[in-house]
Length: 411
Image: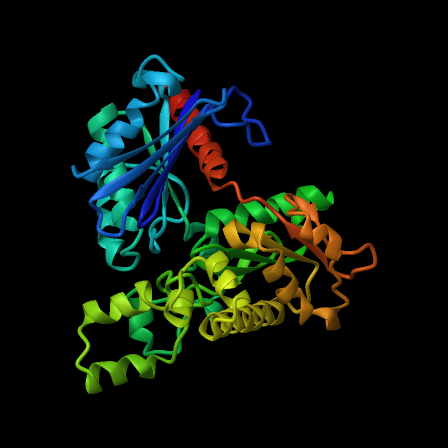
């Protein structure tokens, strides 16, 4: 079974093609093909990179045209040129999509219908940087591959187990009844990493209390007990919680009222400030990329130093909040771009947790470990660095649904 995965972001579109044989393997196989589109800030150019399992690579920049045209070009590299891995797009059996916001109606992976598409569209205002991109990918597949089965996997789904005390905001209850609640995000990654942690440690997931730290351009934490999410830092939208690359994370809501009343900010201006001009970028004035902020800090840039200090402070505070929800901790997991690659962030986050008996092996931490326990042998808490495999998690769910549908058709 050939499964195409689309992982849409606000400024990028990641895709990969898996060839899976039954039964579905536990470990992630290497994709036959991986493609990525990065859109420039003005959206006028698309940087396209492709690589295959055989080592073939392609890198091009395309100017102008629409996103759908650019995506169609990316798909063409599956069947043409040096990155060709299949003879025709028709051999693809199912397409899986990461969809950030599924609201309260969509918690499990589902076959995409018109009703599902309309629900994703309705939720665009809650995930404006992501849901529209996912919808565009779904429609692009319809144009390129026709009626091929498509499956939506929702980032919010894993957090549907949040207890009401964690999910309901202390605002008028009728607003909660209208759907204003904590949904949580990065659920596909948090769920994968929790299961992978149990596998690495050779323990039953239901016996572990975990805090998973998904630290990338977007950042969130999850408290996981008995295999279920019981608390998380992102909320009604992906804007809440930790300091991020260009997103503010949690701020005093009175600031927004003040900006509206005293500076006549429009809703569009508030959205731009909080989602695109805050976080590491807003404080440092250097970049939303932590690597560039660290480089500037090491050169004596005081605003970069401040950005680092705030980032670490809020990360530690967030871990503390998750720790309280769990009433203890067995495993701390770092994942995503920053979590997997920044030894300095992992060290800074763990430094304040020594009172738990948590101790990291500094040599292991510096070795860019992947799927490894970096805690010392006498640490009371295991500390894992796990490469998140969102695409593979989506592929397994899509394959399972596709197999179920095929069996129903055969009956």
